[in-house]
Image (cartoon, rainbow, N blue to C red):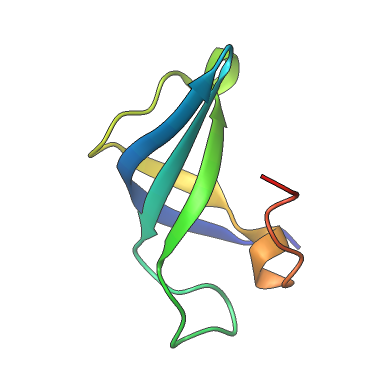
Length: 74
């Protein structure tokens, strides 16, 4: 099952061609982590979703984090 969360981009922390790394504040906690931090790292593939900026509302796939698999190494 895919887990989704809405959030707001806090900042763009790093960019490279076709990718922006961001910090996103989620509107709800990760599944099973009601007391957890709601600010996560996320990446945006700009050719697919456009270029994120601080204040943008986003929809984030948090499935790996919900399963405690981490971020995939970034």
